[in-house]
Length: 173
Image 1 (tube, rainbow, N blue to C red):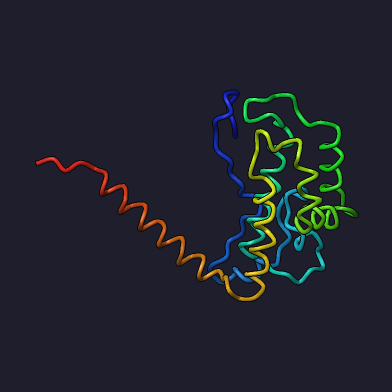
Image 2 (cartoon, helix red, strand yellow; image 1 turned 30 degrees about the vertical axis):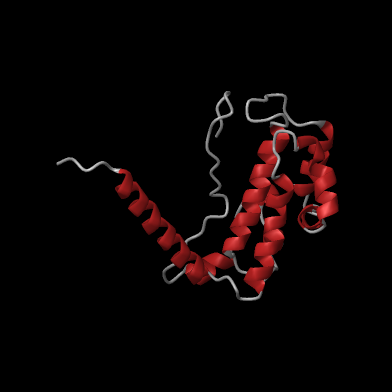
């Protein structure tokens, strides 16, 4: 959600499933999410890959890419998608081509840089953002990252944020 001034917040709940409780494992096997924003390995119903947190991150990359495509000259731009961006977006949203198109966007840095070059003046860190998906996927696949570790890291971040805010509150005597 962005205002005309380019200010706003990006929320991606497209792949949200309940991961705790008695149905958590079954919920992680459901193929949820809007097709264009769905992570590559969640595109096929027959896939036995359960929903992982890195799928959420990959989905967020597609959400950000959509925002960049519809606002190519920055947050306040209302010009909409250019024809070449529309062609890319159609492939990301097409059943037979979505996986390969997303794989081409995520994997080879050269292709990613060529695709995103027209947007870099206003959206400078896009190639690195798309590259994070490959990095996180590899770490998740190796077991270096896990759901439990992610939860623990988020709890630490929350504690640190609360502590920092409390330190900034002036003490009245």
